[in-house]
Image (cartoon, rainbow over all chains, first blue to last red; front, side, top):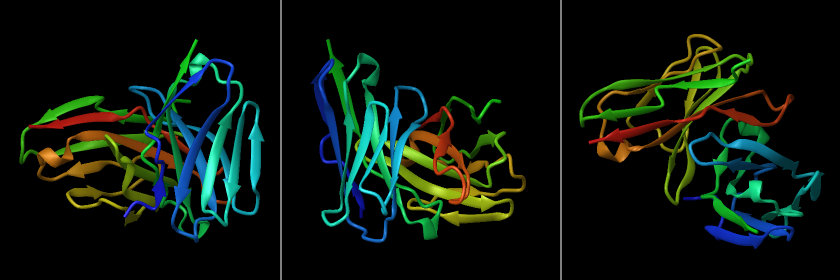
Length: 113
Length: 114
């Protein structure tokens, strides 16, 4: 039973525009959320995270929004750049079960010139 | 500072063979974990460890064994490989929740079981 879902397998966006990636979760006990970026033939790399006590976290071009009532988080990338073309995974866990990260299936982002 | 290293990068096995995937980290992280990545499934947790001598099962532990005798190493053993274990395997290390809240991943091992 997948508790973290990324329902869009792919996203195409023009360079300079905004990329919005979505992630839904079913477990209301999750209290920490992360986004990872993955290039082919490499391991995932951490991008940005958010605790459930916040509803927004920004780091440069990346902003993560958390809507706890809807059990939904999103990642905004502004402006999108060609180097952002990658697979993006969202992950969630409860800090009481630190170690049991649950990942979504990923969204392939393609940034076109 | 090498981070998280994994060996081998690629391996072909026949059904029933055994092998060990190696993982090492030099960041002195207490926590380590193993994932497999399959198309359309994302990353699924196989086993994880919260310190030397302590391991626990993740989401898909069947067919895999782990042990953690040192902080640095966390090998994953396939005792009798099956075609369903064809996948890309990632090892990760990370700090406790009081510290830096992220995982560092290795480059992956691509395994093909015939």
